[in-house]
Length: 67
Image (cartoon, rainbow, N blue to C red):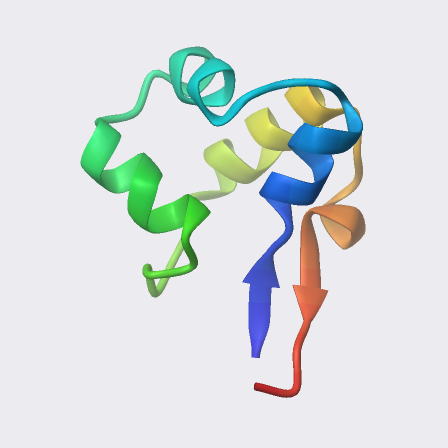
């Protein structure tokens, strides 16, 4: 299973979930589902924005889990 690794990257960059939420400009409900890996898809524009904001690549933004 592929999971979003944003919480680790936020911690690494000294940022909060709230900061990322405000930067992305998404609804809180959609943001929360995305961050907690409860969504089936993520838009390319959100992936790009998170990579720019978190100073990472898509490979770092996602991790593969055996779960």
